Length: 170
Image (cartoon, rainbow, N blue to C red; front, side, top):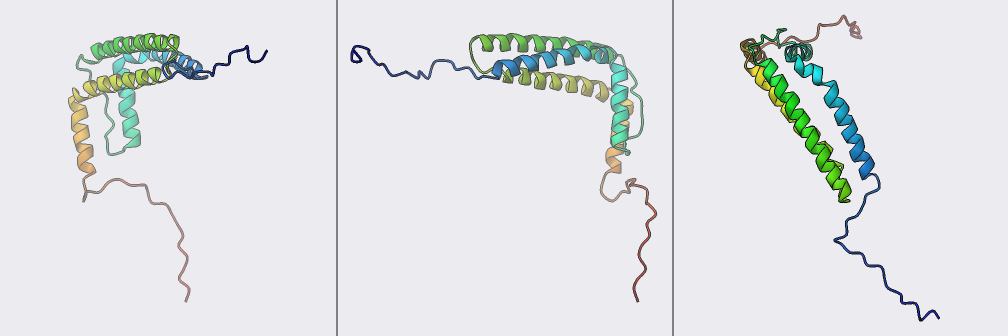
């Protein structure tokens, strides 16, 4: 009776796609976070001058050698902000499409939203850099800050605190 049942060993075909248990959850979670981030940043890029002024204020706070300036809009901030929004939406759409395709094909998909995030970050950085590099006040301030950091020049340091040194023991 046992001889009548044909025992076939399970075949582990290397070409059969495998599912990773948390891949779908992680990929969809990353897409949701990316969508929320994209929609919450729309206001920042619609008013790109305000965003760049905040960036310059943060730069001054972190690096006192960089003088406190305001961004002088040369008419470039609004088109660059719209380009950033458009490219951000396009990259997000491609990331959603590629992730869904990979999930349905049972392929590893969590990395697609990460690549989309890195691509979007590069677009945002590039757009902000284009706007800042077109501002003559930024270029002058950046040049002055780099000159202040050259060796041999005095850089402003922390204010000396009052400290009591112990008297020498005789």
